[in-house]
Structures are given as C-alpha cells and as structure tokens.
Length: 308
Image 1 (tube, rainbow, N blue to C red):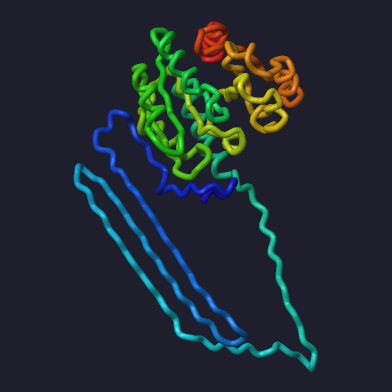
Image 2 (cartoon, one colour; image 1 turned 45 degrees about the horizontal axis):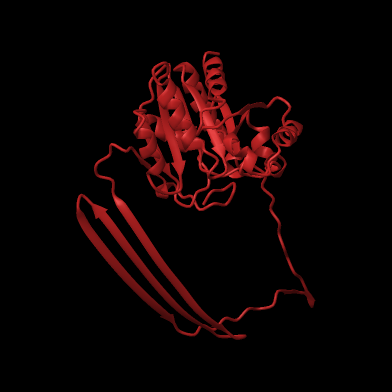
C-alpha cells in the first residue's frame, strides 16, 4: 500500500511491458478470507476460512492452483490480573509521535531522475489529467505530426491494460506500459525502472502519461522537466479550484476539445481565471486534438521549452 495516499500499490503488483514483448505472463488472483468470532467475558471461539485461487499463464501453459484452508481454534481462557499499587489502580497510556517526510524517498529519487535527464539532455514531460481529457490522443497526434523533427519516447501509466501503449506503438515511438494495479499514480521509482527498460536515448523527448487522476499524481515528483495538466471543455470550468494542487504544480494547462465548446456549458475565461488564482505563472494553450486547431501553439511551446 502506498504510504502517502493509501492506494493499494505494492511493488510486486506493478508491471512494466513493451508492446514488442511476445510472452507477457498473465496473472489472476482471487482471494477469499473469512473469519467467525464469538466472544464472551472469558472464552473465545474462532473460525477461519481461507480460499486462494491462482491462475497463471506462461508460454502457452496454463496452471491453476486452488488452495483451501480451514482453521478452528478451541476455546481459550484468558485471565488478567489487575495492576494495583497500594490499593490504587493505575491506567497507563503512552503516545509516541514520529514526524517524518513520507515523501522524502520519492523526492530523492526524483532528483536523481532529473539529474540523469539533464545530463543526457532528455526533455521530460509529465502529462496529468482526469480520465478522458485526451492525453493519449494528444500524444498520438503530436508524435505523428512532428516525429521527423523530434525523437520521442513514451511511458504510459494505467492501472490495467496495454491499450494506450499499443496506440502509441502504432505511431512508431518507443513506448513502455506501467500497470499500477490498484495504484492511482506513478512515482519516481517506477519512472526510474521504466526508463532503464525503455532505454531512452540522449537528446530526446520523454513524455510520461500519468494515471488519469487529478489528486494523487500532484503529490509525486517524477523528475520531469515540466508538468502539463490537461482539461477538456466537457469537464467543469471549476476544476482548477476543486483540484488546486495539480494546477499549482503544473507549468502549462492545455484546454482540449475546443471543437465541442458550442455544445457544452464551459466558460474558458472563467477556467483560466480560477487556475491563475492558484498559479499566476501557469500558461494556457487552447486546442482541439480532433480538428488540429491550436496544435501549432502546442508544438511551438514544446520546441521552445525542449531547447532550454
């Protein structure tokens, strides 16, 4: 479990796959866990039922394992003596407060990532948004239209599936998919491992498409050069004040799906004003990935910032 946001993200459930991988193992785990307890003042009766099903697929060989465990525990008698001093009963409680920066490990690794990217001249973007704002579509069009002038590498982040990695792979850009399982964000350690597997070249542009979520990804520095938050006109124009941390930590806000603006109740200027309240340095670009309107401004921003 993530120690910061509480999402279920143990390291052994995070996977890294390239579309070119021919033999990707598939794992399915079903776990049932039951307990029956009866308590009275002196006796305890326990009944435990555990059922674990595993399904593994490796190299066209399918294995299934069923495990059934049932435990019954006999009654236990517990007696506790009263803690008494000179006919006076005392109750003791101890409170230990430990303060630590729970983000320290991630931040240190993020700085290592950033140092590596700078040394190799790898311009790195962290794309963040709600699900469905158009991150993958923006990437597809961007790579297809300016890949002759730029060397793109992509890291895709999703809880499950290779769908987005397969879409990027069709553009010809090297890509790796990180599946986070129950995790709701990418972190610096995942990026560190993915970059090694992807073998990102020097003098390139690395684009990280984070898990669709405006909350937890805002807390995790990945070592990126710039963070780009994407919203669409099909969302509420009050997104910036509902999710201020994401807009505070971003350098660019792309407002997508402008072709749908006549059909939705979205005030572009109000959305910009809300975001500027939170971060007055935030830049804005309005685009329609579908029609291509505004994409030239995005490409110019990418060119200008990647050369700094």
